[in-house]
Length: 193
Image (tube, rainbow, N blue to C red):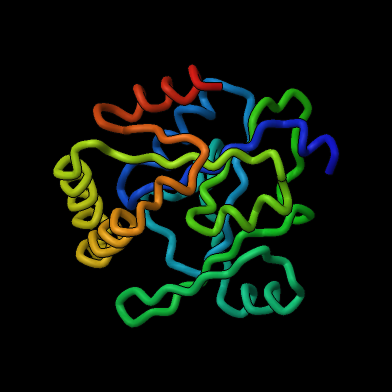
């Protein structure tokens, strides 16, 4: 765990559809880094098929998830209901993270609004929120994604509005803006570090 804490760990949170996954993939192309996947029971989307370089989620059955939860594998567990289907998400405890290869410069994750709980595993973790100054741009991106994958656009817009109303960005160490392209946002992050 000591070596783990020497490697900078950045958790990317942000509005639904803001481009967290795309930005993460771009950063992983530029720096020796490892990504800590969340564990979920939800159905894997076509664009999430493992390509060898990045896997945002580890997809498991509900039974497997519940068994891991009973064995206390998770820092935090969240349940969503999408189209009358229960989906569970878990942040794995440190001992269940992938091995950190030699030469790794960064640890990246998207543990979302429960990321503060993950600091138990990596106390030096910096909380980073990805936002968008032009909300119309964000809503269009989100609409396009929901049309592609059939997810709940209205529900995600409601989540964005609840984040805005709660001033969620004030709870983070850094704020990045994905106003133009994910490439620019990834480069902004790399300049920050």
